Image 1 (tube, one colour):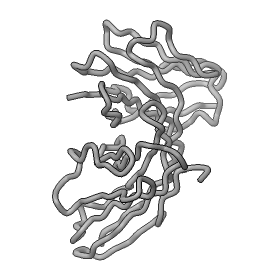
Image 2 (cartoon, each protein chain N blue to C red):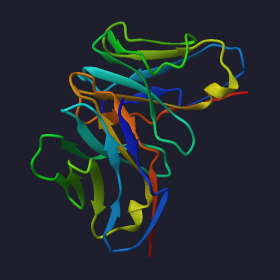
Image 3 (cartoon, chains in turn purple, brown):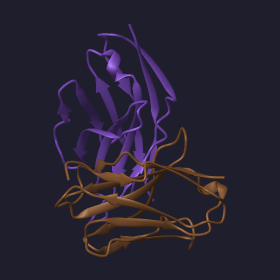
Length: 115
Length: 112
């Protein structure tokens, strides 16, 4: 069984500063994928970034980067130069190995960006 | 379509009634997923399809829940004899085959 743990229920960051949202995972699969989604107060789920377990380099998408430490089973999201619009709930998720692409989500971290 | 479309956006039903939630995935997307999200929680997997075949229904809570995707496109999640504990946001997502899954806006179900 797969498990995602997000230990930070809430985080605060000043505008223009960087912030790291923690995510650890547990799986017995050799091949898996890790995702981060953003859920603003409007309720939509917005895909941010993906990291494959065999990818040697950390994934980056604009201001988002994923700090992937396989031995520690962690996949932290780093947001650089925070903006007010980054205030939202952030979910870490993983998909299983093989052909089963269902996602297992963590409980989320509520990020608040202060002006 | 341009994105994943779910209908209705909001549904209020009386306990004991059946409800059908619809999902229209992104055109050409092979995989379609249903999730349920309680307030303050992450989405929880219910079931998923590749084309018209239901690949995994291990997340369906009980036999009152069923889903179908008869032509490999639009899917319907049906809840029979609804109970108050079924109240949640029901989300549909689609993807080509794994990787990035695009989510719909969800259907907020309230059972009174």
